[in-house]
Image (cartoon, rainbow, N blue to C red; front, top):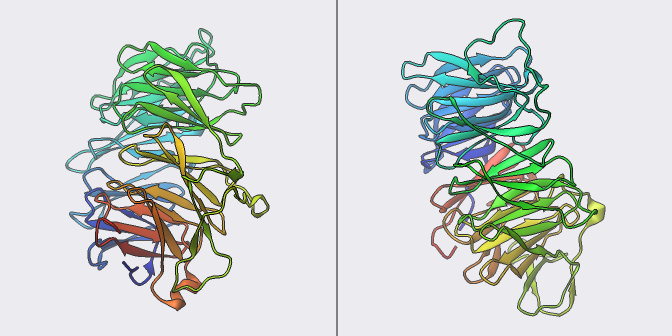
Length: 452
């Protein structure tokens, strides 16, 4: 199991079918064949590329510049569509499930643009108005691709191709935010979900089965609402446990939609049961671990690059260093394994520690990974229970949940190690290949066997 040689490009992303790999190179994007890394296409832009996103069918590639969005085709190998925005305010760009429609938020205009590209690659743009732009996200597609939920503020005008001149939305009837569901096929408004009890919405998230929408507020004292996408009724509420709750920075549903993790701004993580709509527990991120059944892997202070760099600490109790002096993460993060067996968390006050919880054992702490540097990125294998972690260094840390083992794999050559600092990870859909990217280069690691 070795890395390939470094190749140009940052933020490398596999296409959904795993055939192509898109690598950002300043004002151009290199599209390579994922199996050979040979260049398939090179698409040039006029400005620095900020974001590249694949369509669901892997045929089109979207590239966002400061003032322009471009669509490139893997069939013709050319730029087939261009959309210019003079203000240069694009955010929350996403593909619709039909792979021929692009949505993006224009926050200064309080609207969402629906950019349609038909078979002949002609373009039409429609708009959803009265969007509340401060929520993150303000728009989210259901996992089944049938609906899109929009955080709306004031009286909704619906979706129009051309807005009426000299007309202003009337916000006198209602001051709170609501969730409006649109059909992702006809783009017509279907229903409005009343978010009673929440004045300003700060974000929303769909459950994997597309039945539930979780809505969290900007005011820490307001409850989190769980709405039924079909009926619009409120299924349950989650009230903050105490006055020390600083607010919500994100919500992650488990793959089975049975549980959800609420990540707080004050580094707290709470688990909610989506059946009984009650809080199961709060995950405690303590500095001391005394449980002998919890594996603690700590990076050695001095190590040879040819030998394993992580040591399994057997002494109990063991103190976990939070590395608060090295700076903090912008926000805490949690992620579920593909089968929902494990939950990994990294809180802002402990940027160099990964906590792994066993969901089958009622969220018992089963592993702690302590690195020497703050964690830059971590993701689960989409197929196996393997967690990949990078900490801005020259290796990928792999923890296998099946046998609870840990190993680290270094970039292939000593010269490359001096130049490579991994910041970004992306798994291929089959879980057999992972790409790591720095600010300038990328490299691929192929897992030859399921155990690896």
